[in-house]
Length: 222
Image (cartoon, rainbow, N blue to C red; front, side, top):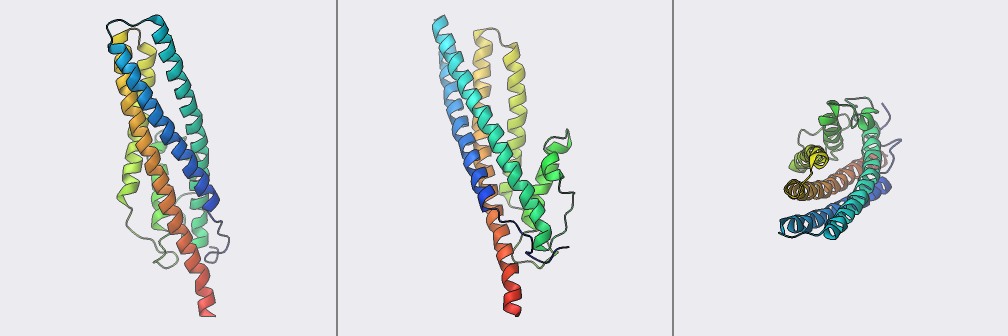
């Protein structure tokens, strides 16, 4: 194991970009929820013209495209952050429970993706406690982490349901139901993105504090 804090890579840059990208996702999801609301209102009208339907379809498609691009960018930045944070643990005197590649691959492997990234995030929090000694870990994980993961899983499930519903929608009633589902999904995704920002911010501050403490200890001893 590496000496404490030796080889530690600061997370400030990765954390900043991850937070910015996640906030962009949250903003676009809010815009998508508002757009879905107006679409729902349109589908409730007794008389809807084809031009109105076409304009709504274009608006919904554009916002969905922007939200998807933002999500991909945010996923890249978030995974870069969590991978580096996990790989930093040995330099803070902690032992890795899983191989480092799980911090990336765990998101993409079926079934494992439902729980392995959350285990990685838990370990980052537990093993970066600035108040514990090297190779010790805290048992507590904040409720924030549980809520973040719950919103992520529920949002993912609803997005998949929405894609299936969109393929089968062929009348105003179906599109109206789809708009309601989109409003719920986009709102959950927006909250989930904000919670992810808080996870990144708090975990980064905790890890940086532990690194600072371990770097200061040899100086104090000398």
